[in-house]
Every structure is written in C-alpha cells, then in structure tokens.
Image (cartoon, helix red, strand yellow):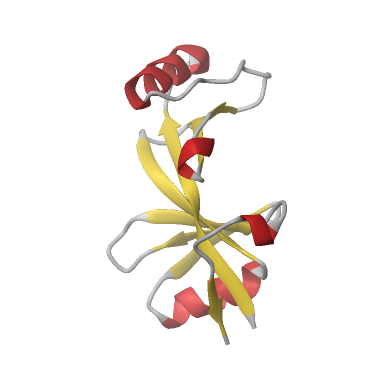
Length: 124
C-alpha cells in the first residue's frame, strides 16, 4: 500500500537567464521567486496553495509539467503504467513518465511531514 498526491508544477524553461524566467513567472503568478543558487531550479513561494512550484532550466522545448509525490515511487510508477502511462527514464530517485496522451510528468519521493499535507490518495 502506498500514497500519492499532486505535489506541484515545474515550469520548464529553455533559457540562458533562469533568474529572469523565475522573475517573470513569480510576478505572473503572484509568487515570490527565491534567489538562484546555481542549480537548474528556482523555487516560487506557492506555500499558500499547498503546492511546490519551480522554474527549471532545460535543454528541451519549454513546457509545464506536473509532479506526483508518492511514499513509494516505484509502486506509483507501476500503478500509472497499468493505467496506460509509460516510463521514459529514471533520474536520481524519480521517474519521468509519459501519459497515453503524450504529456510528460514526474513521480517523485514524498518529502517532509506527510501528516501535514492534504490531498493524499491511498492505493493498494
């Protein structure tokens, strides 16, 4: 048995100026952008919405993808495959998946205090 929930959105940006991309998206969404730390990610403060929103520098075309967090990443990927998704590849501890309709999304490890987060679904 494992749990999963929508954890947030990642705004993939094919850009050389991640700070400017984060400022734009932060201003557009009314969320304060954190300071770039030299990684490929800048967080936006979406805590009021109970979500994780990040701007990510990527090499592929710009798009938005969602993340599903799970207490068991492999079990959740298995469940989603049974629904018709396919695994694209494993990166570190998470799976990049593709829906039958072509959208990419990630299944990531649940972090933090699970009891303080809402929206969990329990799966057998």
